[in-house]
Length: 248
View 1 (cartoon, one colour):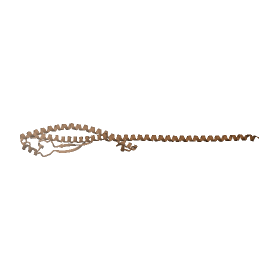
View 2: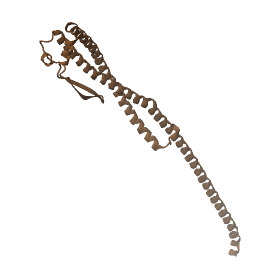
View 3: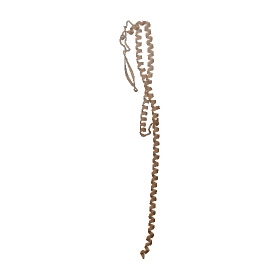
View 4: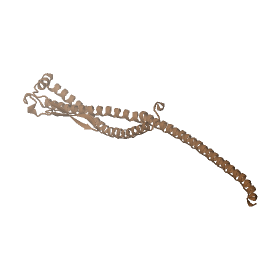
C-alpha cells in the first residue's frame, strides 16, 4: 500500500531505482517469452511431423509383423526376435534453447544388417526381415519422438513460468511501484508548498518587525529632533535678553 511508505526523498530514489530495474526486467522477460514461443512453435511443427511419422511407422510395423506371423508362424517370429544379440544403445546429452536445457537423445546400433540380427539367413524368410526392418524404423521414430516431446514439455513449462513473471511485473509490482512513486511525489510537493508558505509567513513577519523597528527608530529620531529644536528655541530668548545689558 502507498500509505505504508514514508514520503521521503530517499525512499523516492529507491523506488525510482526499483522501477527502472523492474522495467528493464519486464522488457527482458517479454523478449524471452516471445523467443520461447517462437522456438516452441518450431518444435511443435517438428513434433507434429514426428507424431505423423511415428503413427505411419507403427502401422507399417504392425502390418509387417502380422504378415510374418501369418506366413511363418509365431514360433519362427519369436525365435528370430530372441536371436538378437546386441541391444540399441541410447545416450542423452543436453542443449540450451533460450536458457532452457532440453535433452538430445542419440541412439546407435538400431538399424542392423541381416548378419547383425543374430538369426540365420537360411532359416528365415524375407517377411521376417521386413518386419525386423520395420520395427527398427519404428524404434528410431520413438526415440526421436521422445526427444521432441520432452523438449516441447520443458519449453511449455518455461513459457508458462516466464508469462507468470511478466504478468506479475506488469500487473502487480510495477503498478504498486508507480502508485508509491506518485504518493511520495504528492506528499513531497505538499511538504514543499507548506515549507514555502511557512517561509513566506516568516519573511512577512520579519519584514513587519523590521518595518515596525524602522518606524520606531524614525519616531525616536523625530522626537529627539523636536526636543533639540525646543532647547534651541529656549536658549535664543535668553541670549536676546542679555544683549542690551552687555551694551550699556
